[in-house]
Length: 320
Image 1 (cartoon, rainbow, N blue to C red):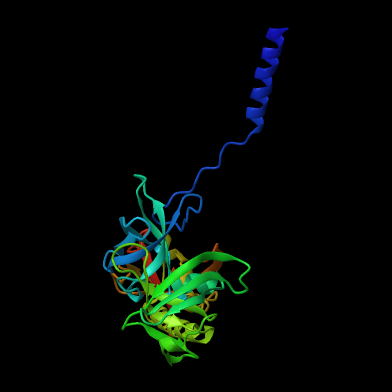
Image 2: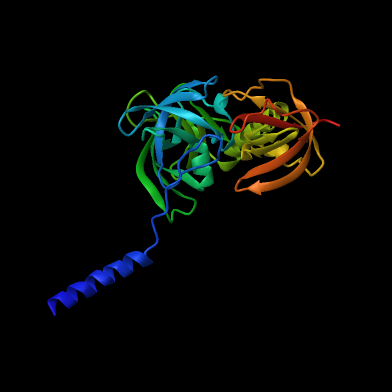
């Protein structure tokens, strides 16, 4: 009887194992592909220490433990500045932001797929700092960090510090610290001080109108950049005069102008995303969405041999 029960238990376990599907592999960052491994990531509040625009690398200080971390910006990374899309040159050293990190092949937290500034995070989540106490002599505000109707409180007793370089905005115009009243709801752009978790304000927005003014100005800066420099993307395939690209969603100003038959210019680019050769003219033959990105196939007027798969390219609509 004991032998029979043991055999039945073994058969039951074997049957369960056969029915259980294998664990789904966790995606990994792969050069030449737009992959964001949400299953394995860290979103770290930190203070930007340095940026190298030529190599698109940098360092930030993890404000929770003061660890200095190095990062390499993936070509498709979203760089969210002033509550909208930007690029590395928009960020100031010292700025506090969220750095989304992923591991490389050595399990080092190096690959970066977004930098989200404080303005973007709070605007996107519809959250504010509600003023609870004001220390005018020290230039400090003690706040509750919560959503628009306070149904969700993220953090209490948040201290926002100001100094002589802090700018205050109300109705889109310059304001003063003294314009802030208990109960006001604020948003900020802050920087660190080299150690610990400190919010030293560069900008304090007393209303939505003021933040949206900054956002509108940044949108214009980014749109102009994309229209002049071209939408960036990966080279998926190059064969003769046919070229297939995956354009990153940051290039929407160019992408929304594309149609089948649209004449474009395209050139290969280096790590710094600057052109490495003269542009080639082509026409769009197919166009479609690939997740949040856009895949486009071109018929070029010359050989596309200088475009290497997994490399970077820039594309812009040719002026008529």
